[in-house]
Length: 316
Ligand code: ACO
Image (cartoon, rainbow, N blue to C red; front, side):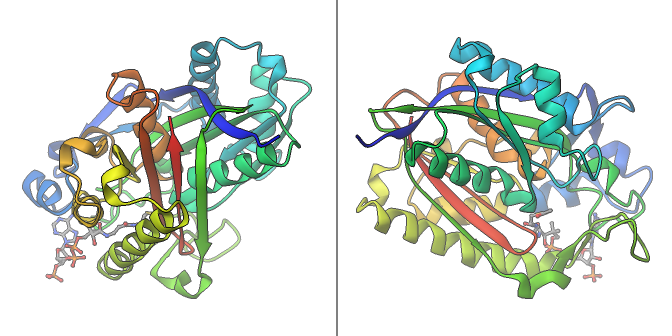
């Protein structure tokens, strides 16, 4: 029997506090027009002092569980993608497990920067296809605001906080059609965040312009790889759900797929780049507002530090 990973629930959470471009331009030398034209971002959400990746993950996860209508005890694997864990250990996955009271699941974190949710979907799919797990919760959750240098105008304009979740279960009908993940550690210096044990610890450092060029080329290639692996043409894709880093990068991928921007789920404008949370937040939005319909083919993709990149093709 071949099993597919079927999406049975999605969820998302954004903190209440909104930080606009105008507010940012009062603290760093920038402007709303510069930020919007170069990135597509107008505002982002900022976590409250008592919010963490696990607390936001819990809200998103509970929404996904409620949509699926399952007993949380049936979840047997929890994967949390985050670059901003509550603690170095225990993993945010274990902290989420405790919050959800899901005693029988195994839980762990993965770190693939902005590609984290795609890597999580890929791992979940391998577990389900092999029969090792039946029901898997994948969450991307980030408090990027805590690793942003708020005096650096080249990075602080980009990031936001939030959590996205998806619940998958083994099914005979089609679900995830394929996943494709890649990494190349050669690009470390273009985008990194030092640990607390390094000098100049804690803050994101990025050579944005160079990252931009690699991202556009790489995402073009992942689109080809995904379509070829499934023997599909561009016309078979109903929706593009991209990582929300920059509207110009997203537009280039949509163009490659010959999709109109109406077929792209965009959350960037009011969320900024929520790193590993962004793809699942966008997917959740498209599902909940009814744009993404059962039976449609959805291409999720992401690119991030590492570099890491990947895609998941889903028949929703
Ligand atoms: N406001 C005003 N001017 C600015 C700002 C700002 N906030 N930031 C930079 N500038 C200036 C620069 O200093 C530079 O000035 P100069 O020409 O006098 O030297 C000029 O604007 C152009 O800077 P660039 O870096 O070339 O601007 P660019 O058009 O590339 O836009 C951006 C920068 C938005 C960061 C873009 O490069 C980008 O989106 N890169 C990709 C980001 C990405 O995808 N990251 C991967 C995912 S994130 C992750 O994994 C954690």
